[in-house]
Image (cartoon, rainbow, N blue to C red):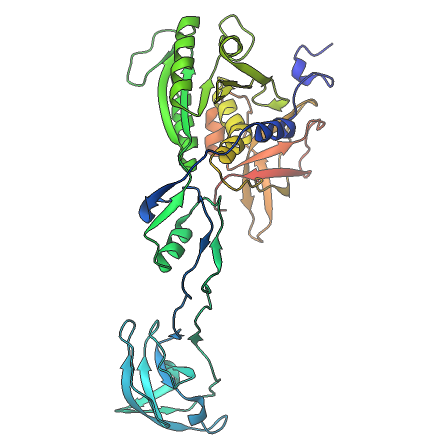
Amino acid sequence: MKNADICAEPHSDLLGVAEAVERLLADVEPVQGAERTPLKGAMGRILAEDILSPVDIPRHRISAMDGYAIRSSDIPAVGSTATLTVVGTSWAGRPFQERLEAGQCARIFTGAVVPEQPDTIVMQEQVDRRGNHIVIDADITPYDHIRHPGDDIKAGQRILEKGRQLDAADLGILASIGTVHVSVKPKVRVAFFSTGDELRPLGSALQPGELYESNRYTLHGLLQPLTVEPLDMGVIPDRQPELERAFAEASDISDVIITTGGVSVGDADLVKPTLEQMGRVNFWKIAMKPGKPLAYGTIGPCRFFGLPGNPVSVMVTFLEIVRPALMKMMGAQLKSPLRLQVPCQSRLKKAPGRQEFQRGLLARDQNGALSVTGCGAQDSHILSSMSRANCFIVLPPDCAGVEAGDSVEVEPFDVML
């Protein structure tokens, strides 16, 4: 019997996932300009310029240990004992600035500047302190436990590149070189709303056939790590005039519009016809599961993504299709998602025809070996399986199923195993 689902037919006219992303990235451009922001407000923002360090880090010779700053020449031979006189202390932020003569040493703490004459730090555990003297009865290696200027960063070195999305470590690096404000790309404005007469706001009483609207909350969560400017426009009924008004308003105030629902071929699926009327449809329908009915186009200069209505489809299409385009528009360096080949511990059903993103649970056994199992039913309305999962199991279009023990490709979410 012929399969009625055109998506499963080997010659169906659907756009492959990789081709869809390639076409998207060729069509969108980074936002123009830059703005200055205080360092504490720069987390997750996209650098608008390369960062060169004006200083060495560390700036001085620094002790890596609590101990004593000594001249290695005061230790006459390997295995011999030496007694040195303690003449001062070098604290972090309060360096010892007097000259150390032969036979003298300075107490020193981690992070403190090493006086000019010593070339070695001997750890306090290797020293017997006797009043103002120390006795060293250990093998000492010259230049031990000293951090030299520029060990981490050299003056003039490019430490962060334009297009980098700043993380916590980057903020620390910028602070260490004295950065007060940083130049970042403007935020991409993303308007989003759901469509559907059956959708009701949280807190309302549901009538038969009605649902609480959840996709906007999912989208808001997906947008947060991108540090775009999200513009939540609520729920729009399945009525042409109201959709037209929403499209017009959203395109006036945003760079990107994302909708959920209404992009299939039913009588109430008005998103694609409205997009065709008010703008342009660049492509529609992708050979992926879940998420085939995805409309991409433009309304004026505003980019438009019409995502399916099923909640898992929303997440998959956003992560695999929309996010790369948003990252380019943000001016970010583009990176491919991490994918690994691991054995699958469960049998997975799949029909040839589309690239599938099944929900999986990636785990590490007691020997450290990774494997993955499916998260049960893969229907696109079962959002709970997406909550349980920590990876996608990525199955190619020609795959006809997976047997337990087969190797599969997985795309981990941001998890710790």
